[in-house]
Length: 172
Image 1 (cartoon, rainbow, N blue to C red):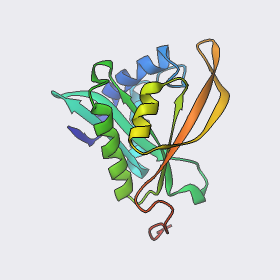
Image 2: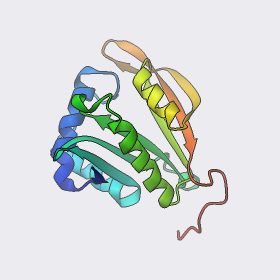
Image 3: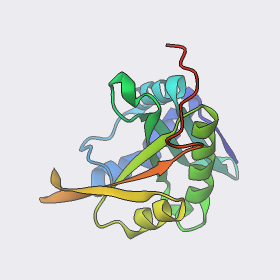
């Protein structure tokens, strides 16, 4: 079941994320955020974009969220996404289910472009993004130092809804 996250999900999300921070190059953070910080991030994403969790047999096994692509006002119709799954949830189509729900939610909210990034190599993330219609936007070489080496990051992009069409009326 995919649903909107609440702050009650912060502990589960922090637990899912911590191994990515501590032992992989998937995240460029070096210290995993605690429950309070995860709750703050969750609330920030919910306030402006979306933060979804997926449950299997009552347990949260993954989450996906979006936030601003960049701070300048002209970027307000673009967003950046992330998705994280517990190890037992990988390779079962749960990431696709969760990501699809997130993209649908962002489209409903009027966003027009979505950007994501992944550290190379990451064939699972590359495959997921390509299967969801993301196209390569570029690779940044040696932009992150983690686990004793420089890491490259590929950025991918996908249009939402009418894409480059005129955005919805802006209330701001």
